[in-house]
Image (cartoon, rainbow, N blue to C red):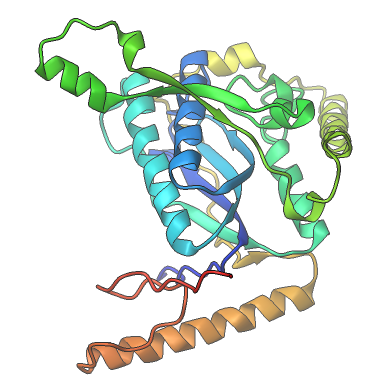
Length: 309
């Protein structure tokens, strides 16, 4: 099945998902991997600015909720994030093969409050919905729950491999700590709640977390089973293969109503039609066909949208 064209209008809210190679537990939720993950995420957001609203890194996949200025910025951000995670986390778990299974998957989230809150709750529920821990804040890996609940930034370590390489080339005896920088990342409120005060936003987050914890407790009571627990999660072999989950086609957009979903599909169809017309002209020998704004023409630079103001 061919990939969809990347369609992310300026200022889009998107949910990004990426899985490890064969679903292996390479994102092993140890303190070291958590620290490295947050450091790389913070550096990526600083180098290629996007608004990060929520994130969770489970053992074999991660989710991000982002607002991006363009499809190009999303591509730059994700290329930096995934390449550096593969290098740093791969080194930490002693994995030298391909790290990611395939290209990340990014899905539009509509401007509806119900759709945005549902995706935020979905990300917050990770760790609990898989019955790994009782509360989202119990997840030992990188998870946004506590930072959103307390309204504080997350911090991690960025290891400057360029400086390390230069020091090694110059035969300098330098402690490893000299190559480590602390990265800090402040999480932005989701667009539909951007008007709320900080205290009210934290209250909304607390309400979502309580509902997730109650759902987890009801599951345990109904089944009589306990969650795996953070200690057992951390004892898993990072090279291990889990049961393969069924793969389903991703939707074009997460929307709360059919009308909004249809409107976005119509916009996407118009975008694809314009892209195909331009691609046909390019194949026929026209060197400057007009591709739609926000697209990646084959063999040509990204077509940027005009800046506001």
